[in-house]
Length: 483
Image 1 (tube, helix red, strand yellow):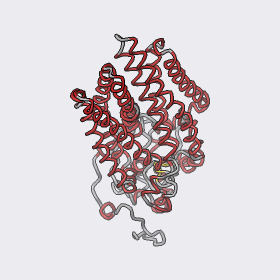
Image 2 (cartoon, rainbow, N blue to C red):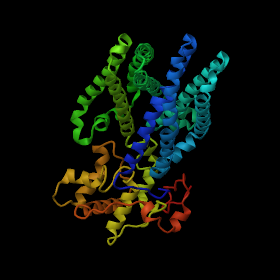
Image 3 (cartoon, rainbow, N blue to C red):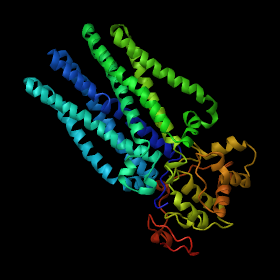
Image 4 (cartoon, helix red, strand yellow):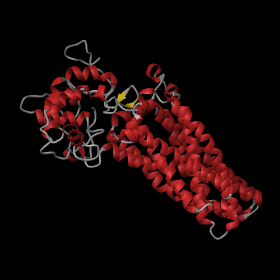
């Protein structure tokens, strides 16, 4: 409400950040967190056996990790900041205020992590001159693996907080925010999953890089598979622990999150498919431990792709089930704080939106005012014609018959009760009517909705000039002066 609305109608705000974030998480979990311990393990094996093949293989694997994490991984990480700031600046602003010192430490750790991977990779060739230098280099790799995990551990605290802030709602401290109910279970789940993903990715690349030395391939595959198999067992335990702490109202959203609203009935089938997928990965690891030379590379590749797909689906489900909130019990997905709702439902959202072009609904501007309301309350999740389009939703509900504004208004007024994952409507009655008129007008002549990056920012007025973020007008005062 205190920022211009950025919106891309053909892809939608949710999909914009989802593509970037999921790609970043896959790279982070599989390569930065999960694969680096394997590299250190291989380097240690080379030191212990005095076989240079271990060292050469570890270096080739590290080169892949180094290139991907410092290019695509780094860019998508920055992309998350840009897209989150554009799409829901109120949410990211609130998180920064709560976790300022946490993010401050994370950035220090991240800089150290980047410095360590540069030093670890670039000094590899010269580290073999003496045994002492090689041991120092190994310690560098171990520190790199630890710092990569610490980066994830800090971010997981913020992700858990967004699902369930826990005691922070009353205590409002950094420690209570970090130690939210979801933190340790989610950290255990992500750590074990990352180790399995990293191990399996290294197995797949090892199979490719050792095709000219089959006896050595057998030895390495058994070693990495044994490492990954142990983490696979702990992943099962961590998954059960994590599932048990998910709030009940979020579990009710899983059938929609796993599939779509149209395919909720497929939920149980997809659960079985996920179970079978993990069982397949476990079977491949077991086969690789017992008979590593007899497992075809296609099975390793299929396991890697399955794990990537499962992590992507997990991120999609995790993002959805916390709805209607973007920060549990504190801020709705539309970027409006729960405590602001009484004020907005009394005065109207347009009276308190800093960059609204219309302040009051009249009989002559209902469509235009409704568009403003749609921009302020709906565009964080919905498009008009693109992905998750509001027009598509209405067509599914009302078909080709003329859409009646009164019917649409009645649905929106009660949609939170019918579909809990939808936030309650935050405006007043006049704005609800205007929104329904605007939505009904899109049946015959739908136009793509452009955000502030295309339409520009409305000329500042008295309301926008006097708005101060974080303050609440006094509801006991009929004029609503700020307190």
